[in-house]
Length: 282
Image (tube, rainbow, N blue to C red):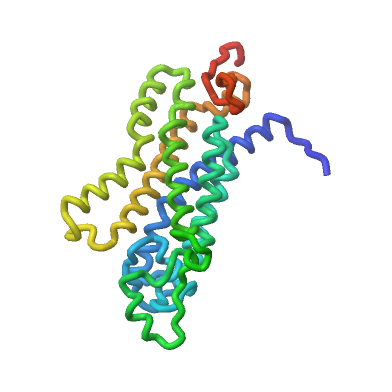
């Protein structure tokens, strides 16, 4: 087999592929809680009866089978979407080494969230399930001798990695936009957007402290996860629009943007220190 396309044609396909990955991370993150929560309440697809709102998104792995673990009606949907987002994070190549490594870590951790289920049943229904014949609770952390589940550890690590990506790398593509008005606009946007995840999670916690259970109820974890995943989704939506408009990725492929990586003192790691824009190209 012989490839007959031009290098420019191949570059276009590569750029389009990375653009699709960014959009997929945004769309999948947005629809996940909607499909689980609203889909459960509305009995979408194969549900015979409405599914009560769970105390966390992770609980939908088991939900629908109150005292039997690993048999949730939305299990495949939960795992499938998380696995898709995880794959996008790993496949996507960031604009700097820090972003690239953090996204790889986030993707691996999110795969852990998907493939290592949360404990079941939840503490509030554990007592009633103990009277069910043949009942065996699913608490993998106890089997492994861990203070907390792999699922919980992976979820926390994912959110931390994404927060660091947002806070420390959001400006990497903004600062090399040539148009001053566009650069100023996106700098203002990401001055706020890169803190969306900690802000949104913090607002949920403040709302709970201020109103108790009157608004959020007993589903604090659900709302924190929902806020976090939508902040993730909105960040990648904005980043996709920014790169699409500024065409920074196209400039990099055409050699108009060059990353300078300099050694940081005596440290072995090399970090992105600055970028320079070449105006010699077309």
